[in-house]
Length: 290
Image (cartoon, rainbow, N blue to C red; front, side):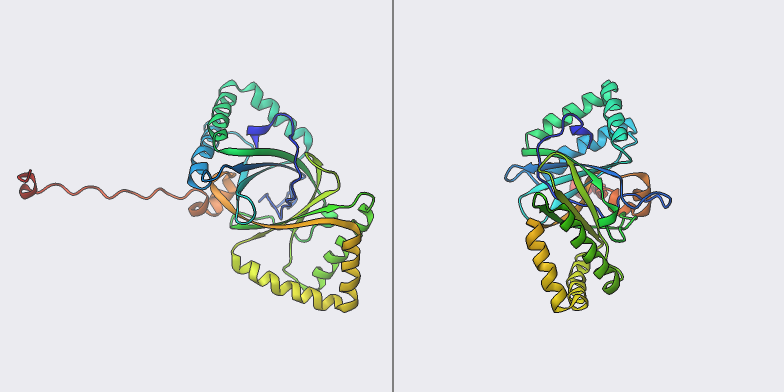
């Protein structure tokens, strides 16, 4: 997100993405993800945070900025918001930052928004991730109708990268055979935290899909068999030292989505403000009352 295009801050974040571009001739996953994480102070999330974040959205819209991002609000864990921006390369990320610096009016608007928004925040951090196609499974390209994100983070023990890659590929193969609609995207951390950190994220149109996901897991377990699952658990214990699973909701009011997303689902990404009923003209009887 452009509000933090300066030096990358320290972070141990695990977020993947199951597709953030709608172009049919482009990869389902962006090559590079920049992720900003904002922890709000107690009582400062929700509408209060949405209001300050709207300053960034307004600045981007006024400048007709070509780089877009979407926001996620936490439904589990500490109160926080994630802002994900996609780039084709690190060079594209650099050029976006350079263009921001050269646009004085735009930079000033972002600086002002940062000051106002900062009053609500307890902590912020930023990270940069690279796509791992070999660890991803059928990532969705159209996320315009998605409403939730399941986010899983994995930190691999030093020296066990090969074992990690092999066990993920085994899990991927198992889901390919047993669960036809299973999908996820995977990224590896480049900058902003401990090495050997990987992220996996699955987009969902509803929480009912999450319920069905639990049933899909049962199908996977059945397909692997008792011996296969035992071996898999042993490999995970050897290769991975921490795992987290979190749930987030898409936040349209804090997002600056591209036109394709808005066109695909305008009621969600750009809902029309409710009109206030016009006041009825006062009758002669009411005019005579004090």
